[in-house]
Image (cartoon, rainbow, N blue to C red; front, top):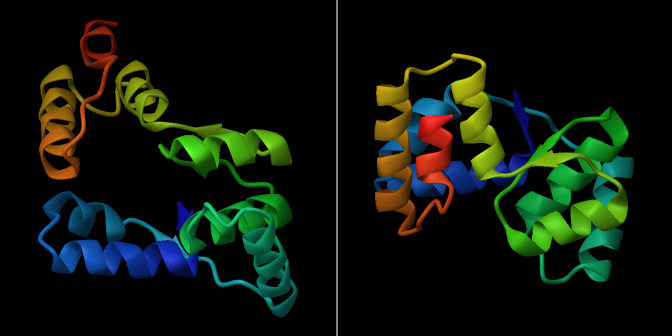
Length: 133
């Protein structure tokens, strides 16, 4: 798995703030640097979509140029990804894939979901459906 430089910087900051889950996942990813052309494209996209952060913008540019799948749970980012014709998975789809591909046991997935909900102060509406499927 690859991440944009801005996403990596954000993950380092999150780890410093105590998000333990980030530390374990950050080690499994590589940073995919932007070329000069991709940086210019990111600047253009950030002017077109000022509601997005630099992590989403850089990720979309890399997804376009390298034909990558985006991972996002941000509602506005998903709308822009659709507008740009980029494939993406959101958090519920990622969790469902972990279960259906047997990458995590139901118990481990349940613990992960609980940790995400606690640390991100969020609720995963399809939690019961994901764990039961």
